Image (cartoon, rainbow, N blue to C red; front, side, top):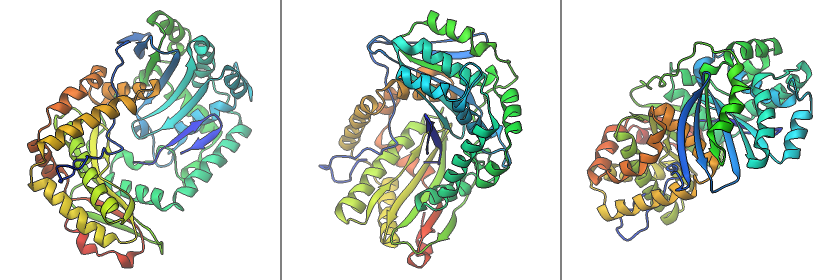
Length: 448
C-alpha cells in the first residue's frame, strides 16, 4: 500500500470466516502468478545485463520490463524522485526520437511504454505485439540510453510531479499511507519517497538529472524481464546492440535491510472528516522464510473475517482489510475507513484475538487455498503481471523459479501455522489515523 507513481504515456498516475459455511473472502493483496503450460522460462546474461525470458507461445502480446535496482537506496531526501523524473522526462524526447516523436511513434505502433517508481526499484516497461516488438524496443531502449532531458520539457514534467506530490497531503487515504510509512520506516532507506516530495522536486535541476543518468543508469543495476512469444536469440540481439553498450558500473543487488522498528506507535492527523482513515503496519518475516507464505494466508483469513463482520454484517465500512505487502520482508497490517473507529477497533481486536488463539477450520482453510489458486490464474494472467512476479521472486527470494513453487508452499500452510504467525507477527502495530481525533479512543489502539 506504500504510495507509488506510474506514468503511462504522458499521464501521471499514481479470508476464512469462522462460520464454517461462509465462503472465505480473498484479500486483494493476496495474488500471485503461475506459468502457463505453453511457457518456458530461462535466465541468461547479455554483456552484463541480467535477463529473464518467459517465452509464451500462446499469445502475440510481448512485455519487456526493465528494473533499475536499488529504489530508495539510491536516493537521499534531497534527491527523492530524481530517478522517476529522468524516466518520465525521457518521454519528451531522445537522441533518435526528438521531442514529440517518442509519443507519436509509440502511438502509431499501438504500443505503450510506462514507468513506475517503488521502494526497491524503478521500472520502465513496454507493451507491444510480436510484430511491433523490435520497433517499440528501439524507442524503449533510446529512452533508457539517451534521453534528451530538455530543460523546457523537464520544467513541464516537474510541474506535473509537483502537483501530484502536493495533492498527496490533501487526500486523506494518501495521507494515512504516508503517515503509516513514516512510522514503519523510521531510520530506514524506505523513509525516502521514490516519487519525491514538494521540497525535493522543486530543488532538482536538469543538470542533476543529466548527472544522475550518467552515473546511475548502468547495466549492473538492470534486470530485464521479457514475457511473450519471442525467442532468446531475438532478445539477445536487441539487448546486445542497445542496453548492454551502456557503462557496467559497480552496483550489486542485496536484499533490502530489515525493518527494525519495535513497539506500538500512533500518529494522528486531526481533520474534521465524516470518514476516518486508520492504517497500521507491522514488519513480518523475510521472503525466504517459510513464514512469509503463512503470514500471507493469515492476513487473507483476517481480511475475510473483517469484511464479514465490519462491512457485511454491520455496515461500518466500505473498505476494510488486513493488507499484506509483498516485499523482501513481509509487511502485515490493518486498514479501515469508517465513521465509527472505536466500534471497528473492538471488532478488529476480537477477530485478531480469535485468529491468534483458535484454530482455523481446516475445511475453510482448504477453501481459501483454492481461492488463492483461482486468483493466481485470474488476477496475474497478463504478461505484465508475470514479469513483475518473476522479478520479485528473483530479487526477494534469489530465484525466479520460486514464483512457480508458490502453490506448493501454500498447500503446506496448516491451521497451526496460521495461528502461530498471527501471534508472532500481528502485534505491536504502528498506526496512522487521519480524521476526527475526538472520535478515537486511543486506549483501544494499545490493545494491538
